[in-house]
Structures are given as structure tokens and as C-alpha cells.
Image 1 (cartoon, helix red, strand yellow):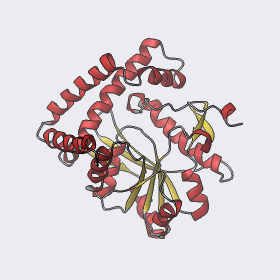
Image 2: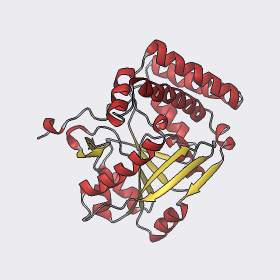
Image 3: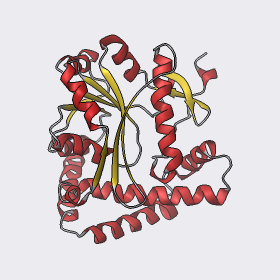
Length: 288
């Protein structure tokens, strides 16, 4: 491993340890400062994010969209620090779990379970809950270019009981997860380029990963949509919902079904969605 990769691993380890020494109030204040720095000085993905928010909420004023984005920066800065503070930060959370019985019944069938999710709100906390609750979960993640950071985050997540495989891993590996009656978690809300299927997300055709639909159609494993968001009263609502496509089950109808569920969540809590992805980068005209 290169020196700067080793340095990244060591830095993240030390930073995580230091964060756990802070109180929740101190950690949140640090998150707010980091968010302001990122918004006002770095402007990380600011232009792309505002464009995404404008696509999703064309009825909102420029000022209204900027308010959403400022809150988004703050929300995810604090969320990232909270994640790095696990397990201490996890013990402070009050959960409202809806739909856990669906997951339990699905595993009792013995055919594995597919969980679709998106980059909405507390997805890392959601994964941590699954791991700490003893569910046999395997999440498909993107390998990071920095090897030190990649090893750190993989080890950090696996310490909660969550196993990881990389997006470009063999499909046989992913099918094996379901065959072994485990849970396969797929974050399916990023631009899938020419490999995706176009479904509507905020009434805009969006190239979306086909994995959830294909795994279900090939294995008949149950599929659910799972999210964890912060309610106005501060309670974390972890919600497991069945994915019910309209009409015949096809790649397109299944993908549209869980994308619609995600959109419903984002409309209620727009500041808790990760607007920084170039969600609508690929156009239908580019693949026709």
C-alpha cells in the first residue's frame, strides 16, 4: 500500500477515535462548521446539486432551493461524523421500526431477501441496525480509489456485522448470497449510464440500476425497499416496505416501483437526500 494510502487509513482511524471522545452536541457543532466550510468556501458539487434540486422541485424559488441545499450540507456533514462515531453515537438513537416482521417472514422462507435502498438520510445507520440486529446482510458497495480509505471503511462497516462485496464483483457471488438465505442490499439511485433502465424520478427519465429487478426475477427472492430517516421529533424511522410493481413484473416495472417509493420519501424530507450525485446525467437520447 502506498504511503499516502497508509496515511489515510491512520488519519481516519485517529479521527474516528477522537470523534468518539466528543459529546453529541460537540460533534454536531463540528458538523455544522464543516458544512459551512464546504458550502461557502469549497462549493463541493454545489452547482450540480442546485441543478438537481431545481429538476426535482421546479416550483420552488432559487432561494428556496438554496435553503434545501444548505440544510443538505449540514445534514450530511453531521451524519458523516455520526457514522464515524459508531458505536458510541449509535447508542444515542431512538428507533421507530416499521416492517421488521416482513423481513423476518422473508428469511423464514429460505430463499434470501433483496433490499433496495437509496442515498437517502441515514443509510449507514440503517445498515448498522441490520448488522447489530444479527441479520445476515451483504451490501454491494463501490470500491474507493484510495486503498487506505477503502480498507478503513470496509473494516468499519464489517465491525457492525455488515459484510461487503464490491460492485464489480462476480454476479455468481451475489447470487450465492441469496442462495445462502442472506440479505443482499443494493443502493439503486445513482445514474447507471447505458447499463440502466430508464424510469421516472421526479417525472424525469432516469437511468437506474437493474440489479434489484433482475435478482428478483431470476431467484424469486422477496424484495423490499428500506430507508431510515429522521422524523421532525428526532426519532429515527426505519421503514421496510414491499416493492409492488404495477401490472406484470418486469425490470422496468419493478425499478419504477422502488424508485417511486424513494421519491415519496425525498419529497417529504428533501434536505435528507444526497443531491450531490449527477442523478440525471445520462439521457435517453444517448442510449437510443
